[in-house]
Image (cartoon, rainbow, N blue to C red; front, side):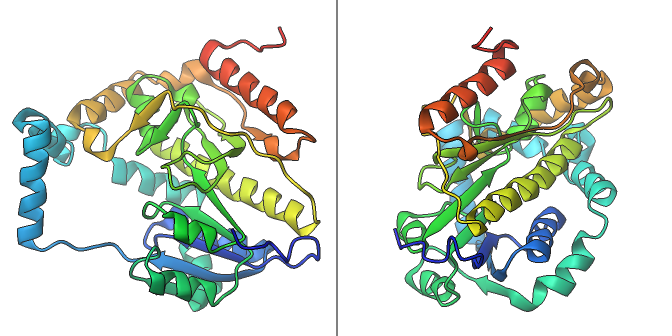
Length: 316
């Protein structure tokens, strides 16, 4: 890992790696730009597949998972069948909770946005390194490889799921499909080549209101990500040290290929039953990195997990 030279002198160069088109990612970039020294935003470009490549991938998926599973997955994208519409839900939540995101992005971030075909390639790493970021913040995007991670003094990830309870893809949506909206939230961690497997720095649990939806919980969690990133950066700018908590094995590790019409129908049923009404809470932020020792941070993280899973505290 490169040496973190800027910490302590109130000047920390910040870079962000995230996809470009989503309003919630534009919100994250713009808010960081307002309060910190954002030197560049790197947008990985989505890979496009030819018809031949798409056909090969489809055949491979059918071979691995079977026709029934393949059909269930395809049905999740058919509006008349899916029940819950993810895009519509997230778009409405963006409109309600991040109304200025796209406008702020164009003013503050677009001039320093850098498209990169492959952030893990030697040329991608070289392009990022030209800006000499002291800290790279990541949200979404590809799997980040070790060479990229080690090229920056500090690389952080915010996973929209409570690690190690829910790791992987669509984790906030899975909590609704599993009738566990109280498990929604996000995790600030150091980046690791293992998906969502880095040492944990903090947890954010969004407030839950009656009639909340997966989309609203997701957007609330992204807003929490901005707040948590900003607090961590402020501590770095003050020259503060930090501790982190190693992860164990995840309770749930969800993959994109597992998402089918069954989950979207289960979410639709949970929304109709107003499941969130039973789990109303205020927002909670757990900044484990601020503790003096790793041992005390580990104990606080264990308390958070116990409270979420069993509704008890280990001190009780």
